[in-house]
Length: 149
Image 1: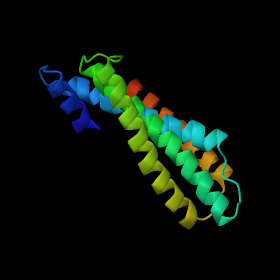
Image 2: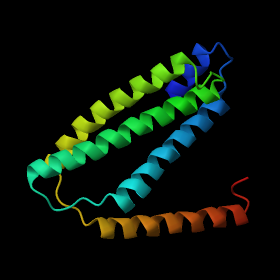
Image 3: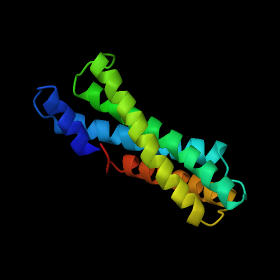
């Protein structure tokens, strides 16, 4: 993600900004986490299904989510590089990102759906909620002691 942000800056002919690329990378990573946690973890619960149904379900979910994540990353990278977000070139880039992300995500999701065991998503979700709560407490402590500025 970071290298992609730097490449976008170079494409736009601007001076390389590590700070802008780092910000874009952090935003892209956060958006991937948010989509995976809130969409997959909360709203799309895998059901105990036969292999064919599981293959289609997991492949479809992964296809759509990965395609959208790739478009989101393209938008953020174009924005941090100062490039036009709605030009014909930008729309073509988004289309390519959506299709390539969907193809790769669908293939990987289908394969993973075939070999993955059924997971207790409620248990995993509770553990993740607890981890996020603990991370918040650590951040508050670091802020209180001035370890983060």
